[in-house]
Length: 414
Image (cartoon, rainbow, N blue to C red; front, top):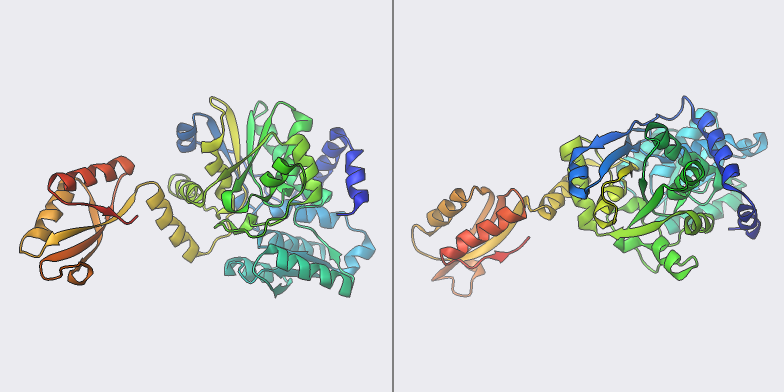
């Protein structure tokens, strides 16, 4: 980040930022969907707050990124538009830039990590962009995009560390406050920091009492570490199912805004994310990608109670295979699937006895493996591995106790 950009930022007021965000609202009119808030009974009951969902997964490109990308391209001069644009992205920014470029008649090249889900790659291509796949993470794609920027004189559209991009994202906060003027808190997913920076600028300008809380995965907490160290840090590695926020180094501009206007950043585990994904799908029929579910996972980590809380569901671009895997893991996390093994005497009637115990405990068997070769004494003992559908962690404990009373030692697998 150029020093001049940081110096300019330090001289700008919240009032200036709000005016720019309101200009972005005008640019986005008729292009982006004004996503209405959805009240959530389930997340409200679990968190002790009144929770509202801001469903940015319903945008035409499936994510909030369209807001910032379109606003940025609107700010380009005629000569800049003729040069064409280039962007690096793990997926959602790619689609936002590609769609915006197509809408405005600008040539676009997008560099994406090889690990990007196929659904995001194909969607980006469908908007007419030239897609280049390289590297294993966002930072690899970024390096290649910057090289191509110089080689071809493209205009680089940064996914998060650009004020015009942040202003576009900030329109989300304006819409939330328009619907619920007395909102107390907004939870926002954090990767590079552009989304939460824009939201914080808008929210604090409109009402400085609104708490802005960022949520990061434990395996990719570059922004939290940066805030704790009081300087931008670069993680050696990132490891999280939330590929959309798997950023090793956050933005310099976004860091400055976040350290001044964001109240707190909390971290969540991948299991927390999968559990929230499952609840959004099962209870609200809303599909979220892993990074899109971050805000809801963060509800367990905040101190607020009895407050009006808006959670940004940032995106829903996820392939069917990943959805299946996320559902299974979410079911395990919430105690809805229980896999265990026990050893049985190799005599008639033992399997029936176990089946009866499970039936009486209202456990629905979904998979069973009866194997003589997994025990030390295969002539006398049989290992039985069972997966059952359950109603939660209390139900799992009840099943373990029921088997224990009959002399079976349960080895929990998951």
